[in-house]
Every structure is written in C-alpha cells, then in structure tokens.
Image 1 (cartoon, rainbow, N blue to C red):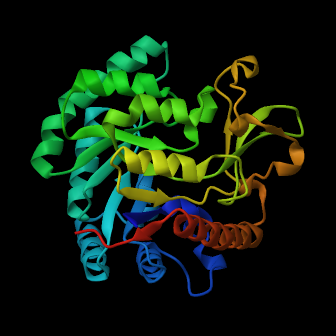
Image 2: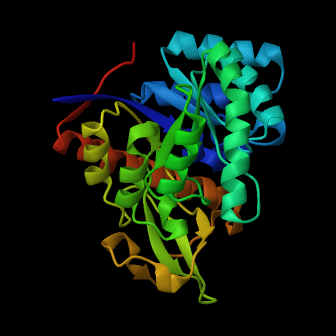
Length: 313
C-alpha cells in the first residue's frame, strides 16, 4: 500500500467563495476547512492571491490567528497561494503564511517580456527572498503556471540553489505552453515539492480559438494515475486535488507546435464552459456537481492504484 497525504485547493470551490449567498448556510474559509476535514483531506491549499487575500477571507493579524487556530484544531496542514515573485510581495506573503500556520507558499512570475528576461528576473527575486523563507520556516514553490516550460523552471531553481525554493508541479498547466505533462514532470523532478492535480481537455471555442478547458476530474484527457505514480516513485508524498471545472486558459504557443500525445486531443465547442458567464446559482450548482463527481472518481482511482491517505505528522 502506498501512503500519501491529500490536500484540496480552494479553487475547487471558487464560486462558493465568491457567491456565499448562493450556498446553503453560507461559505467562508472556516466552513471550507471544516467541510474538507470532514471529507478526509489532510490539508488545505488556500488562494490568497490579490487584494483582500481572496479565499483567505480576511487581512488582519487577528484573522490569520483564527485561521491558524481552526487549522490546528482540525489537524490540517496549510499552504497559501500568491503570484508575483517580486520581493515586496513575497516578503509580505511569507509573513501571512507563517501567521496562518502554513508551511508552503506558491508563486509564479507576473513579468512580461522575452523569456530570457523573465528567467533572469525570477532568479534574482527568488535569490533575494530565500533567506526570509528560511527564517520563517516556509518553503516557496514556483509553479509551472502558464509561462515557463518544465526545463525553464528547473533552470531557475538550479540557479537559485536554495533548499527553501522548490517547484510545484501542475498536472495540466504545461498544456498552455505546448508541453506534454510527462516532459514537464521529468524536467522538474529533482525540485518538485508538491503538486496540483486537475483535469483538462483541449477545446475550440465557438469563435474557433484553441483553449485549455478545465473539466471535472475524470472527464478529461490528462493521464492522472500515471502522473501520480511517477511522482510517487520520485518521492512525492503530498498531493493536492483541484476541481477546475469551467476554468479556461488561452494557448500560449502556436497550435502547430502542440505535441501529438493523447492529452492534446482536440474537442469542439460543446466542451467549452466558462463559469464566469453563468448565472450565480448555476455556477455554484455546476461547481458542486463537478466537485462531488470528480472527487468520487479520484478517490476510486487512488484505491485502484493502491494508494491510502494518511495524516501528515
């Protein structure tokens, strides 16, 4: 039996957070943590990205202390998400992560420009902030988001060369930059500290554009069990489930450069769903259905693959 810990990302229920008036009993970070602990998750990942710290639902030191107390009482580990590697942002978010009792802070670059310039600026930022991460006992993870390919993430982390600066491997984000998920994983493998598990398809919009379309776990084309097995063999033990139903991301490369592997099979506009265009009640209901179905599929996949979820020490 292969034992792992299992987190869930707050993006899985993003419309519940955005539209709590459409959720019976309301919804906030405390309801999220209680519900996810009851569902058997050993940790929660919370998007604190942007003004108001998004799904963290508060910005005060008192609020952070309440989050930490609730997390500890429920026996949950915690990771926070931010974006923008600029040292000012990272310094602030390291402090928030520590105050909430988190051990990991996700980020990605927000710079624009030639790829060489993006790499150089990201390296400089992470080198500058690494001592603060060490002092606070928080690991910063750089995600292959919608910008760098796996080999570029690996080059950045090799240049930074600090044990508190690692990688977050996302199962589907390499599709946006025309990279097969296995190629991204293999390139990033020496640095992977944690991951986001999701499911996607490639689809055409009614206008004919090609997008990466988030779907309920099990409804897409990503090789989820095979990627999980490879990460496990490489030593990873913390995995994070993420329901990305109705999320849409544009393609960042020429369509002619897309690999011919199965996860790049192209679907038509009938698979295209944009949650932000739905009526609020429909968005919450669709998200809840996708979350419930996807989680059931994922847990069955773990069982069939010989995995057992255990609490983190």
